[in-house]
Image (cartoon, rainbow, N blue to C red; front, side, top):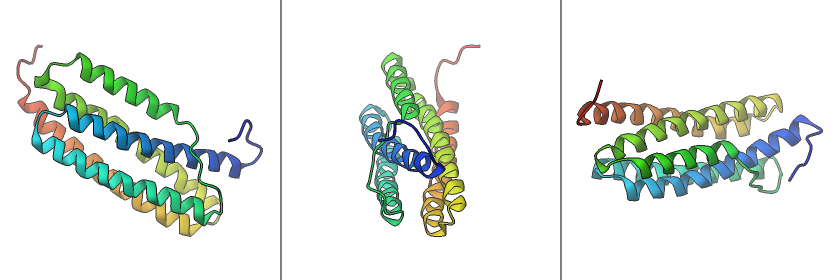
Length: 166
């Protein structure tokens, strides 16, 4: 959409589009992870988060509408990198550790999402758009809760992982 940013609003609009791209790719990534996961508990949690992520997409689209901008999907190279790394790690892993690998990737993705929403909130505040801030605070709170759940689940899975070597 933009070749060059001339204003903070142009940069913000680009990042908002990149956030939308990020969430759309995460829906697909979660689908891949659901297929690869070994434990039903993990598949179920991933499916629930996939549904929540669809809600995040709707909120991002609402923000575009509130700001009176056309919905745009700018590139998000960071999520592309996390996606490529996750696929490679799963492909190289024995089934016995796939769930742990998936959860580790989820932790990294959640941290990225949290940073994205924190930045979007700062930008919306700078524009005086409390309505948009409120939208992104909902997504941020959900991402923070998901991170806590993923970390807790990962700790449990990691403790049960067989054949640890020193």
